[in-house]
Image (cartoon, rainbow, N blue to C red; front, side):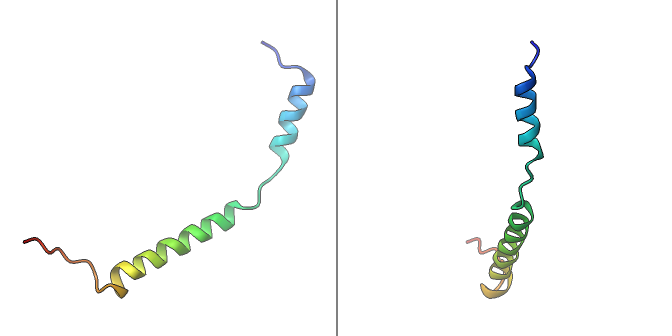
Length: 52
């Protein structure tokens, strides 16, 4: 099945639109992970196994 030239042009136009939120998402996720591990290991007193 061959694609029509108009369909190909629309696909190429969509592919050329660049998103700019990838870097922001990366740094937000990195910050969230760092805050979580700071809370887990430092603020809460560390990880300890309390098995009764």
